[in-house]
Length: 145
Image (cartoon, rainbow, N blue to C red; front, side, top):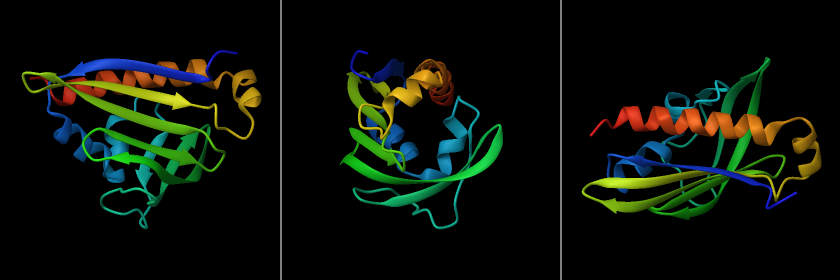
């Protein structure tokens, strides 16, 4: 069973502040999403996320749907995580890597999910690992250095 977390890391040619600004605006999430599921932020989403902020997203996984998220971890320019209604979290950790670069780790943490076993049985950890890899590749291309 492990830790019930899936993480991937990439080195991005941008300062943590630049990447955090991108992540803290829900309107940008569709730009970097490599899973193909994030369509757009909802009209009620704040322009900048903060601890406790709630934001909705339009999604599509086969059929279109809407999801609500709450920011549950927040450290300016270093860490941001939001919790999905079903309890799992998407976490971004940014660590300065010198010369204007940042080590970016995205994590799908389903240890807090209401039904982690159901997520495993439906293949979400593997599918999300592939999506994270594509997301980090897109993010890297946005900051070619």
